[in-house]
Image 1 (cartoon, helix red, strand yellow):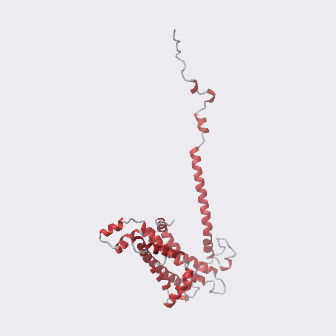
Image 2 (image 1 turned 90 degrees about the horizontal axis):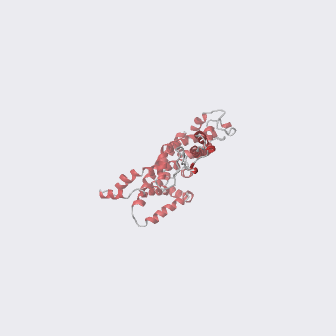
Image 3 (image 1 turned 30 degrees about the vertical axis):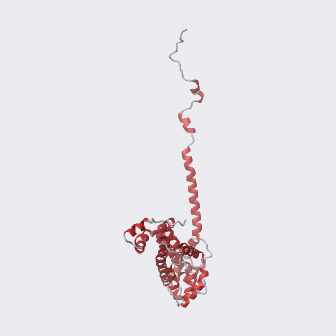
Length: 318
């Protein structure tokens, strides 16, 4: 039996792996028909982000429109404020600010000063009293602590209208009506349960090993509270101060009840008197002084926003 000679130019490649000539394509043709998958994958999230930002900007403009309209109206003459609802005034009248500043019995800075006194006393009172009460609930062990803590939380659900009459009778007997004491002294007694709860949550998040290490060095509760807990609780303290400032500055009901003399009026009450100050409604000066009253709140929120967000995020109130 003889071996069949193999020709040198014969190919041994299997038939299954050969590509027919009619199906062979150039590299440029193949690249032109491959879909641009990465770019398409990136286009989807990018479109969603753009739509999300457009919706947020739209909702933001809707919420800001009343404020922008009031700002625009403060520069309009009184007779065209409600005839032209647009934001761009056809005529500008800067006299609204000068007239509004001196429209009432006292210059407007008198009412700003009254509000500043109440706000300063309230902020200091809440920072001192609420932080001490929060430290007691978070670190001290005393009989009935869970019960007292629950009672404290229940006071958050009490509306001010329930307790305003007993408070008025008490402060009237103490002859505190038409003074700043009814609005400041309760803050020194830790009456704002919301801020106590906020700082309790923050104190509980701090390691107890810090307290134990301080006790080994001979520190008591006073030094632990002043030198360890308070410096570490700056976000919670800043949150308490900012909320107290905003709520007290904008408070109308309590200040209207306890302050009845015009020289004791605060900013919210003074703004209310613009409607009754003259026979005609002084809308232009009213809007002008409303913008002035918003400036302190805007400044406090602008510079304290970082601490506000950090304080809420680190206290479990989300």
